[in-house]
Image (cartoon, rainbow, N blue to C red; front, side):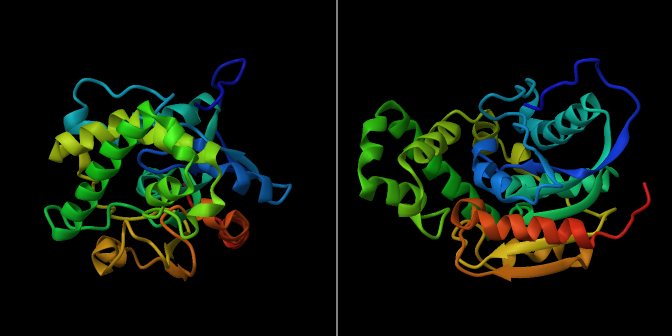
Length: 272
């Protein structure tokens, strides 16, 4: 979670030199580690744990009905603890939707979405496909969490990572173990699998900040026009990034850092 300031929250101010990095469903802040190292010196990364994920704020008992909004509320609370009003926001997958929701609430100076979730139509074939992929991934992760020694085998790691990265062998054993642990111990994912309401990501009606959506060329989780339909009305910049998977931060952290730096640099002043 974001470290709280020693004196508690004060007057909120914009943070133009900081970037909020939001991980996706079943992941954790570690996915941004190499991106943070590649950011230009004038940018400082803030990488919280999204509520409902391992090490983060627990979702309340009514998570089945309000899990996504609880995540947004918790992120706002954490920004308030740091006395931050608006900040540059970057999000991957679920984190991309959360970034757009923060922009909708007036908390973003700019937004970069990497393969954002929430573009499917409720009840669509696309949504069912995403759910089936997460159900399978969660089951496999639960089994491997109990027998992590199997992850030492390159073929097992490849099978686990192939759906989310372009180059599985480039991911270390340690990071693969982290990936499996986060996926296995994810309260938000369990809620989304068990309750349709918990995976209903509210349609984004507007964005209050300069926004870019970057789609991964080798995305096997959100692959197809159905993943983009729900964002077309926003009329934001869209780019296609070749040779990266659903987690582009693991495939090409330098490129992701460049995308972040470009988005921050070209962000025009926006009104609160």
